[in-house]
Length: 82
Image 1 (cartoon, rainbow, N blue to C red):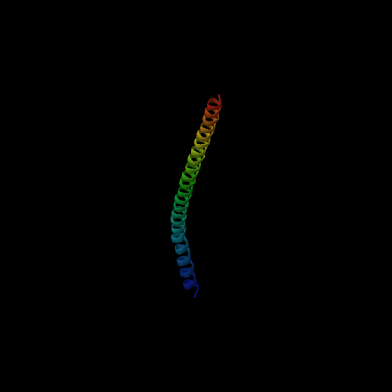
Image 2: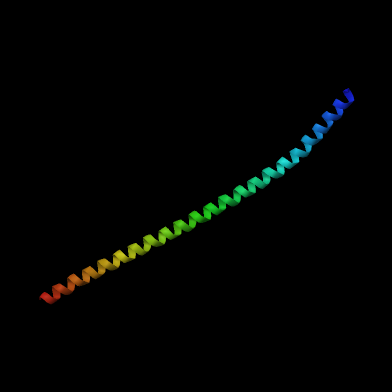
């Protein structure tokens, strides 16, 4: 029975060694997946930030145009009144 126990412990040790290598591989693949997900999120955030910037810029341009138009109208009415 003692030899059987030794064989059993040897088997367990071998199994542990094999699993160590597998665990490393699994951890590496997990990290890669995480990195890919993080990069995806970053890209998405960049895109949303870019669209937000574009929207803000267009709003600013529209406001400036409206102000110019209102000034032109007021000037034109002043000239017409004269």
